[in-house]
Image 1 (cartoon, rainbow, N blue to C red):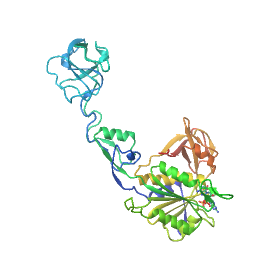
Image 2: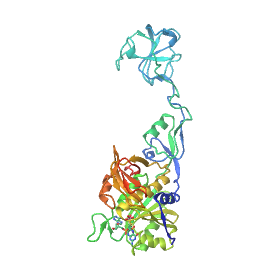
Image 3: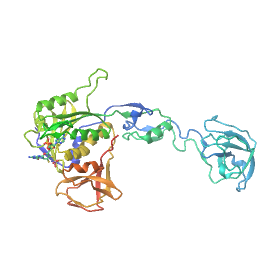
Image 4: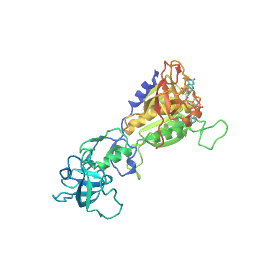
Length: 422
Ligand SMILES: Nc1nc2c(c(=O)[nH]1)N[C@H]1C(S)=C(S)[C@@H](COP(=O)(O)OP(=O)(O)OC[C@H]3O[C@@H](n4cnc5c(N)ncnc54)[C@H](O)[C@@H]3O)O[C@H]1N2
Ligand code: MOO
């Protein structure tokens, strides 16, 4: 097996990212809820103008400026017609002087220039559902035209969203309004999550010396929140043959029964078994020659020091340490960037925020601290170190540089958000 290499958080993340690339893409309809949360596989460009036609921005009267005194004095004019949103696409009330009663969103009649809001006229207000009773109206030239012009928001061909952005409410709103029916998106990646350890048991089972397998639940929750489908295998004992056969199962092609034949998972994540113990099964399998591209590393970070990468049957494999806080931190720092890259998302989770409290940090290693974000910045979410009790309160992880031994309130910190369930 390759030597153990020493590296920084950024170096290990780069090593992880070098092993993954975006999964395949296809067009998905904007009205399919499955499109939400997927990453765009190409730029989204408007097919049509927004607004699609010149229309009234206010309820009132459409006027021709040539019918109104230029000095702004009021004039009384006949009401020639009444147009509504959704009514005929164009109205031509003829050439004689007069105004057109018009409702917000209705197309501006041919030859008309502006809309005077009803509350600025002698009518005062319209009665919802009421008939048109006014024969004439007194009004004056206004400062603003209250017309939304065709294409004033979006021109055909204008860029609306970029490849790598996730489809959310804003993207579907803009794309649908601009005449599109579907957008190109990457499918959701599939990620296998395995825990290793003979002490691990399913929840609610086991006796003395056993440990509930919490890591696979944590990993599944984070991976899913980052936009992947999860195949959670659960706990595999510290036995090389058992781990190899679990890896074979998750990386095998999907059975071609009711699903089209295709690749199995796009990424394997294991927790545990990466340190120096006699039963460290991940190290054992990595050393056996059965895995490819093996990269065992010690990252100068706390917690989360031992890490490993490999490929199993061509599928990238990220191995994180078993200590639950180390596993959580490693998942946010290394696994989720890989998931986002597989999903086609351009990674954008790092923020700079002030420290809302002070704390000490060990010399010579990057310290990773679960933090809660508040109006004053980031404060430790719990006692730190390997204390799992901080995790329920952690919105993000702060990464304190290796040369900092004391964080002071107000110091600027780099934080990575812990994704919300989606
Ligand atoms: N001699 C050395 N010992 C250790 C070193 C070292 O450098 N030399 N590194 C330590 C560090 S740092 C870490 S982190 C751990 C990582 O060890 P492993 O990845 O091999 O993890 P395990 O030994 O399998 O488990 C550690 C700990 O976490 C519990 N665990 C594991 N999996 C789960 C799970 N799915 N759910 C809940 N809890 C889990 C496990 O029971 C152990 O208590 O190694 C140090 N040792
Ligand atoms: O590096 Mo380990 O993850 O601190 O216990």
